Image (cartoon, rainbow, N blue to C red):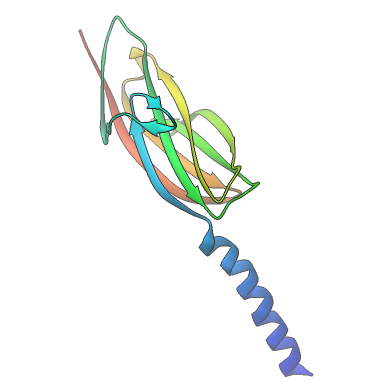
Length: 132
């Protein structure tokens, strides 16, 4: 009796574990714009803006294994959450993105986190700097 219960628990835990293993971010990129669902450039860790303009940045995310589910982009400035964007995933290999307008008074350290439920899949750190 004990071995059947143990076996059942192992099978159940493998099912739950495989759900997280198959859900993955295959590509992600901070970019200044999106064209045809693709990032146009790679801003990496530094975003440069001009004081007389409102800088807008995009975070592109390609995910696999999350059909008909949702991911969340959390935009944080100096550790404070500034935006939460829910993105529906419509296929097994899905490209999506969110964007954030960054005024000059929000210069400094930023982070975009990609969440699926209560699991953080990835995190991207960058800095925003404005010049005159």
